[in-house]
Structures are given as structure tokens and as C-alpha cells.
Amino acid sequence: MKKLLEFSGIDPERLVLKWVSSAEGPRFAKVVTEFVEKIRQVGPSPLRPKKFSGEELTEKAS
Amino acid sequence: MIEQVKKHVKSLISTGKIAGFLGLRNDEGVVTPFLFQQPEDVDAALSLGDLDVPGAARYPMAKLAMRLLQNSQDDSIYGVLVRGCDERALNELKRWNQLGTTDRLIKVGVACPEELAKDHQCRKPFPDEFVAGEKVSPQPNDVVTEILAKDLDSRLAYWLGEFNRCIKCYGCRDICPVCFCNVCTLGDDTLVRTGDLPPENPMFHLTRAVHMAGRCIDCNLCTEACPADIPLRTLYKRVAEIIADEFGYVTGEPGEGKSPLNILGPEPGHTSAND
Ligand code: SF4
Ligand code: SF4
Image (cartoon, rainbow over all chains, first blue to last red; front, side):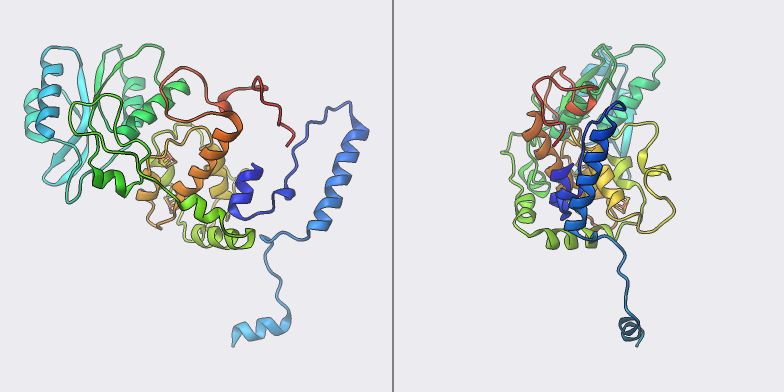
């Protein structure tokens, strides 16, 4: 999966796959916290619809 | 070339070795798949799909043969016309348990001329055995390397631009010889949002790419069929490379072993599930 994302131009760091059993609450919390931290560093997804500022919108309309 | 094929097929039919021959029929210039049961029909209309250029009309013969076997009421033996790609597809379908347990197909092979092999940058333009044509060498395809040479942003821009033209006709899926599922993820609203054009970009195409992992036999039919000229096969080619690197599995080879993504549970010797 990561390699396919990479080929398509999406940072493979944005995907994490880990096996966590239902008996491993603390581990689950750790895995999720770490991933959230990582995603914060990587920043917003390039696939997120762009939000234009008011000025840009007027520019586009003209 | 066609005369050799006709002769061979007629003898299979008249000696009763096969109940019918799944080939192509030329009906006043229109080529479609057809189940030949009479030697006269073979003489009159059997075609290899060569029109203005060799192999101008190709169909997923392996998938059609699979449906023929699944729908036949008895356990008759059928003949089927195969090029190199059709044979790879049959081998792959067998590994995915789609052709039943007994061997009910007699392959009638043709080797493709160089022009056709070049057109499709074919990795093996001939079946293991063939009754007509001559072996020409496999043709290289460098598109994957070209894309890998770009940086991440340019790759994304490239693919989003290509996928953006998709009109969601499902042609790529329907023509694919190894797309055989009864229920398709691409039509399930909870998995890939339906109703939008272009379909969810890039999810629609990446989803299909994942499903082609360990399956796509690189026949180029999808790219050829796509009305929007999206280079789909390039994407699946990369997927095939990944599967070969990770699992050592090459699609379309003869044999019994299952494709890695058709195995539930851990694959012996593969330890990178967490990566
Ligand atoms: S054949 Fe082309 S346009 Fe049609 S669904 Fe597939 S990618 Fe989209
Ligand atoms: S090249 Fe396209 S049509 Fe052929 S097997 Fe691969 S995905 Fe299917």
C-alpha cells in the first residue's frame, strides 16, 4: 500500500498499519497518539480541497 | 496464419475432442467472440481479430472461457483461442479457483506479430504452445521508471490529472480478464463514493489498483478500452512490481500456488505485515 501511494505521489508516511488486539488498550492509545503526532508534522493532505481566500476568489471570477 | 488455425480447430471439432471453440467471428467487418460448433462456420467466419492492424480486435478470452465453463450444464471440453496474454489470464484465473478442478479447456495458441507486441509493449507475446505465428521477443516498457524519476508532487499532479478525465464507464473493469468478482467494491457507495464524475479521485483508481495486486497479467486491454485514455496499465504495472518484490509472486505463470493476496492469514516467510 505504501509503495502504491508513493508511486501515486502521496507521502507514504500518511499510512500506518498496525495490529493491536482488543486487550491492548494502552498500546492502542500509544499507536494512535504517535500517528496523530506524525500527521501533524507532515501537514494537511495535498488531496484536501483548497480553501481560497476572498481575494483569490474575486481573481478567479474575473 | 489463420488457415493453420482454422485447420486445427476444424479437426478438433470434427473428431469430437471439443464441444465448441471459443474464438472470434468476423461478421462483415465486425469482430466479436463466438462459440463455433460447426466446421463450416469456422471456414466462413473464424477471425484472429486482425483488421487494419494485427490484433485490432482483442477480447478477454480467458474471462469468456471462465463464464462458458461456469454456465455449461455438463462437463464438456471446449477449445479457446489464446494469445500470450490470454494464456497468462487463464493461468491466473486457475490460481484464483475460477476454472474448476478439472481441466476442461484445450488452448489453441497463436503467437503475435512484432507490430502487435510492440503496440502493447508485451511482456510475452506468445503462449507456451501455438499452432500459428512466430515467436517474437518480449517488448520493454519504461513508463514506470519514468514516473519513479519524478518527485512526489509531480507524480500526484500527473495522476490526479489523468484520473480526472475518468467518466466512470467501468470499461476497465468489465474488459479485464481477471476481474471476476460478483460484487464489486467500485460500485459500493460505502467504500468508494458513487454518483460523482469524475469518481472520487484518486480513491476510485487506487482501489482498483489494489484489487489488481497479484492479479493483473498486463494485457493492456483496460488502457486500450478506456475512452478517456488513462494509462491504467502503468499503475497496475507498478503494483505488479511491488508484489513481485514483496512476495516473489509473478502473475500469469502456470502452476497451482495461490496468489499472495488470495491467502488468508500470514504468508509463511513474510514478516512485514506491520510496515
Ligand atoms: S475505462 Fe477509463 S473512463 Fe471508464 S471507468 Fe475505467 S478509467 Fe474511467
Ligand atoms: S492490463 Fe488491465 S485489463 Fe489487463 S489484466 Fe491488467 S488490469 Fe486487467
